[in-house]
Structures are given as C-alpha cells and as structure tokens.
Length: 59
Image (cartoon, rainbow, N blue to C red; front, side):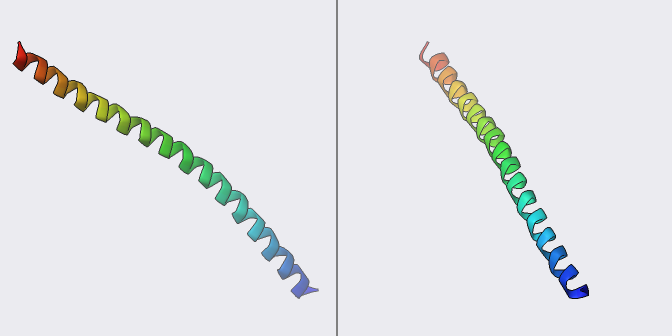
C-alpha cells in the first residue's frame, strides 16, 4: 500500500512539472516578444540617428 502511494505521488509531481513547463514556455514566449520588440526599437533609433546625421552633413 505504501509503495502504491509513492507511485501516485510521483505521477502527480510529474504532471505538475509538465504544467509548469508549458507555463514557463508561454512566459518565455512573452519575454522573447518583448525583447524582440525592444531590439527592433533600438535598431530603428540607431538607423534614424544615422539618417539624421547624414542629412545634416549633406545640407
């Protein structure tokens, strides 16, 4: 009986970690989206800065 209970607990903890893993993947996805967005913003700012610099020099 004691052994059977242990197996049941093991199953429960495996199931729990699977749920956690999928939640973590969702969170990672959100973080990646945010980082990607910030990176794009940064790139755009640098490009704008370069373009402004070129325009100022050509005037």
